Image (tube, rainbow, N blue to C red; front, side, top):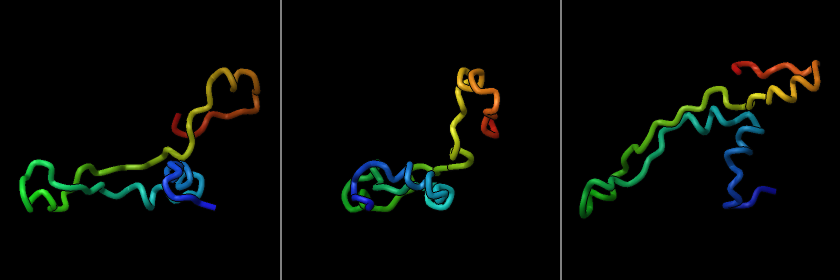
Length: 75
């Protein structure tokens, strides 16, 4: 059961394989450089990019212990 504000959405999206769908979108916010009603103008804050971060590198010490382990692609 997913609970709101449990602070694990990022890791859930990675585990479900949906991170590239939901995390490759720009982040929008308020225009902090303006005053009055212009403050409430929707402004792009940053353009996020999620590429191959589904797997983290396996520490070299673990690979040295178990010779059957293979480093994840890209590391």
